[in-house]
Image (cartoon, rainbow, N blue to C red):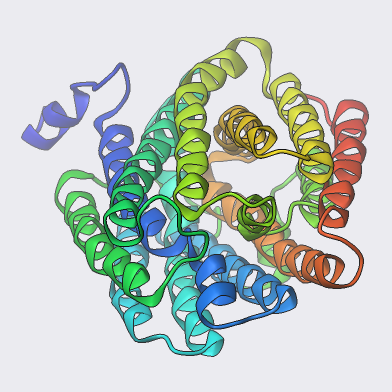
Length: 409
């Protein structure tokens, strides 16, 4: 056995080392992203004076900008039979973009930086998820994606704790709005872990051999026909249901704005996000392991039910303590669903098409999120601050019915 194969045969936390080290990369990247981007909606409204529709535009386009790149990069990783290079490239693009937010003096520049950051995510995400799926057996997928989500979210938790400390030192405890100086300190502090994340991925993750299955996409060009080939009806039904769910799942920018709308001081908003990520991190791996035993569909239905109830709660909340509770439950929803849906995608796709499958899955979510966030911004400005949340709850119930009746394990 070669030296590299012996190293890779030594499991970490019961899984292939790739899962752990990609988790470390995601942890460091999320420390950075949460410090730099979480308070962007408050920066847009408090410092730049942007309206809710602009927040929706920036949130939707930035989150959805990577959709096409996710589809292409997933397909391309299948064609190459290699995942790591695209993942390193994507993380590097995001890392290079982040410091430019320091110079932002209009919402257009904020959009440009966030767009580039999400472009990097589009390049990396499908190939990274396919590499995780390639590195474990079918009976370990829920655990693997659950561990990755736990580590990713632990990074978000740490990033927000650091952000809360910076806000406390710069703004104090009573400030309701963020100022430019505080926002720039968050950017400075957030760049370092992003660089470290790229280094960990480049030096510690190993490309899985024989990722490509001959004849899968070899020799085919990038086209709708080459993309759709090889998937059964269950996969396309699942993507359709994800479209319905995501149309009501607008950018989390609006959840943050709702907290401020309720009168929560800036430091408390950050602490709410800390609570959200704590529950998210704790729940992710156990729920992934549960899905390995009970099946993915049942776990996803439970998660969407909690989401619908949480969004109803955001619509009807009348006190700040309600928002704290809702942020905690929102983390429970994420912990239940995020890793499990990715494991479900791997269940529904042939091994040689996993990159393409993740690209299509993330692409549908990303493109739909653009429309969802624009709709939410218009509803926020022209109907009520509660209306985007009522819409999200209703569509989540429809998606629950769809996956319960139309998709088999």
